[in-house]
Length: 117
Length: 139
Image 1 (tube, rainbow over the protein chains, first blue to last red):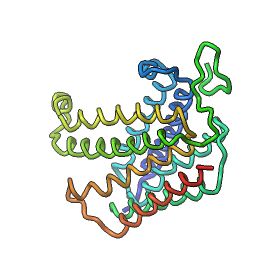
Image 2: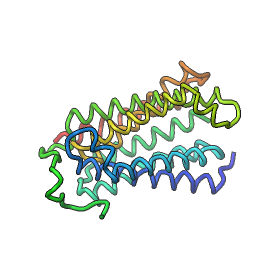
Image 3: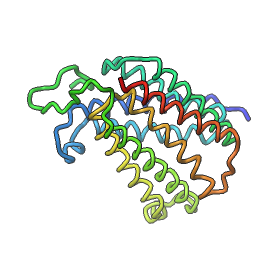
Image 4: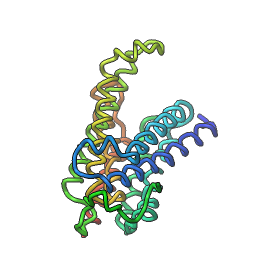
């Protein structure tokens, strides 16, 4: 089964947008005053939710066609982007266990993609 | 207003974690719960989608599994945000990959999804990866 380029671009775009959703939620969470209501009033959290919704729509559209073997590993690229943004925006350190752990997750998700063919 | 700025304005109370640990154990617990909610949401939504015939709006709005699935996603997001208050994004976010583990384990119970070697290997590797990130971030 060949995977159309449009599916690859949709899934890559979705993983990229999803990683910014995580950044926006984190930025919102860091500025959150106590109380549950504040959660619904934060524009950063609202933006994060909107980006997550957008990325899930793109994922569904992308995964409709093409091979899961190719597309599933791309889905989990979102974790890699997020590792970079965590360092860039929040100054969180890279360390060996984070990089190795993410690689294991990536290979694991790829295996599940192979198993779902 | 910038999305990410290094300082917090005086009007907003600073509730950031003061500890040097990469993640509060409560935050890790909350993200763990998040993955269970996420898996429940996916299974409910798949069940709901299987019941849908055609794409009429009335059918979607009265589809209980689908509505319950969305509700799970709502709780999921609230838990994630609360967790992110006390922990590093780079530690907490990868834990969400456990959702794949629960969905892969639960799918054979709810749908005709056979288990195979690839899935077992994938589940094992994800658990290992998430554990490694967790353990490596304790110091």
